[in-house]
Length: 464
Image 1 (cartoon, rainbow, N blue to C red):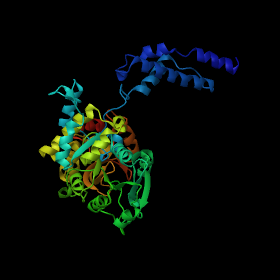
Image 2 (image 1 turned 180 degrees about the vertical axis):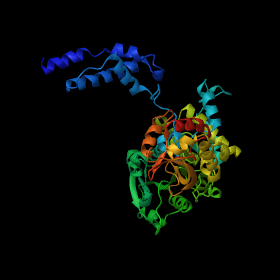
Image 3 (image 1 turned 30 degrees about the vertical axis):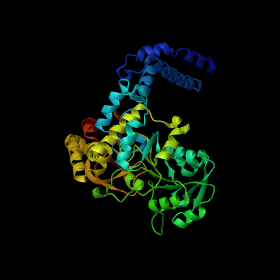
Image 4 (image 1 turned 135 degrees about the vertical axis):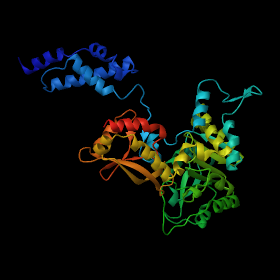
């Protein structure tokens, strides 16, 4: 029989889609996966089998064999793509892993607001339309000392909205040393162009003086923009203009001044061993007209871009039609209100996970690592080369880039269990565990491993 005829004969022996789906639809590893998804995956597996036969592969897979490949493809994915993971990287504000964890109160408020109707934009006492921003505006005013506030969906959006509102068609003066790039290759110059403003660079990469701003101000100037370099540091022979100096120049020349803090904090963390970082209240007190910062970085709340400052300018931002495209939903309002409430009551360091993780001592972290080590069998210790080691964690999220946090980790890996293979196995677990590879060892950093993660992590390690 010619080769083409043999291939056609083998193709005819392949099972149909329905036969494959019938084989797998009750498989426990695929529980919760909709039938439509099973059908689509079965078609893909069968298409791969057809390609093999056409390319000359001998034999044809049975319905059972194709079903096994389908189970292998789909098992472990679950019904939902967005899933919980164990963060053992030691990066507290890990952008790829969702950044800030929400506090128990924020989670409670999310459930309460999501499960029923709410007064999101309703003034119940007068039975009139209200403002979604009113739920957090008073908190932000009290916590920052600003006259007003506005919240949009992230900090880049906050900067875009301010630039488009205050400087469209006008010049925005920025120090060359502050033309930063944030995550995802978004750059301040790009945001400026998108807003319709014209970038006017002053100074040099490492030194910018007040006179540079003063000499650049002209009839086309719409805004003086100061950008905090929160994701990198320039050290050595440097000079930068402070917030207060720039605010005074802006007032003298009748030009608004905005400062983008990026990962702005409401608390001074120096007493916990962190270097000096300007806080939002401090920058507001300097006289800057607008200050923008993120909700899901050092603040420890949901993703949001917060702008605080002069009431008149905040009002202009709020009235901009672009604001509607950038506005926050009820879930963000609920989580942000709960996060800010913790600062108002003075409980932020104890109840907001980001702050608690950042300020936890190495001794406390080491105790948690030892608890995990005690859950591992002697055989596991020997097989995986388990060792408790000192290491350093990172803040992450583009915040405090030079800070290294002393931490404790469990190191894994040896001749019989190479670290990279252990890394692969842990990432394919349920839930996936993400550590970091360092010098042929896999480190599981306990600064970011939650107490509730210990039982499942121990079980996984004992099974490797």
